[in-house]
Amino acid sequence: MQRFSIARTVATVLATTAVFLATPAVHASPLVEAQALHARLGGQAPAAGTRIIDIRDGKDEAGKTPYELGHLPGAVHAPYSQWRGPKDNPGKLPELSKLAQLIQRLGLERDTDVVLVYEGKDATDFGAAARVYWTLKTAGLTKLSILNGGMKAWRAAGGAVTTDVPTVQASSYQPTIDTRLVATREEVERAVAGGSAKLLDARPADFFEGDTRHAAAKVPGTIQGAKNVDNAVWFAKGGSALLPAADVKRIAQQHGIAPAAADGPETVSFCNTGHWAATNWFVLSEVLGDRKVKMYPESMVEWSRAGLPMSNVPNRLKQLLIDMKLSSAK
View 1 (cartoon, rainbow, N blue to C red):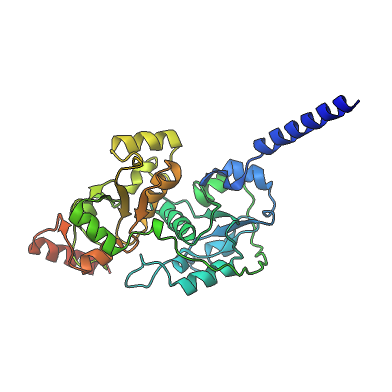
View 2: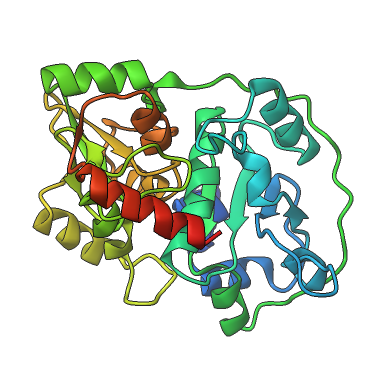
């Protein structure tokens, strides 16, 4: 009788474990597909301990935000602009006190399951979610996911949309910045001088080649010694959902940016203001498992203003033509 009882207990434990392992977890991967999240939530708001953050910015002609027009059940709103630095250098991390206030307002703790939702317009739109993901990870949060394809994928999966605004209890979490994920200008300067890191420019080729520049940058071009891998390579043409991991791995190998060996140099991802760079950082760090990759958040805006070593800087005449073009576009 005792043997039967023990055997039945073991069988119950094994069955329960199998069910648990078969249940999709929101934080099981840095990317969560819309169908999986839909199945997990079942049209309901997320359970306690999970927070869906809608980062969509902007307003329509009537002054309504995308969030007000409809969002995932239980989602809270924290527009992308709130996660950025000052206007003259938006790539900079927000002041720690402001970041703490934002995290606390959203009711986040270190181990809160966080799902980030963007609109899903294009690959650049994914970069906003990747940047917020990186920001939260630098702040010490440990369970982070991005809804792959954003709201566009959610709607296509038949996911529920609501205009109800949830009430969230504020947290008392006090973030500290994990410097292992952040490359400072001084670190990049040392890397350029000593060749101690791989510098990865995530911008489209026209920025890298010096054919244009960000409006806040001083001169066109790239950091001396950098390699260009446009952040758009990780997406189907015109798509906003990251490609499957096998495709991502193949593309990384084609571009010669497979994860670094334990004794190899670290990678520093940069762009204009730490937006596109966040996508390359996310792919290398969170999808491919490279633990030796950082992001230089201030990127080319800061670097070019500081007069530091650059490549692909055009002659003065071409710079003037670029200046004129940017001026007329305002």
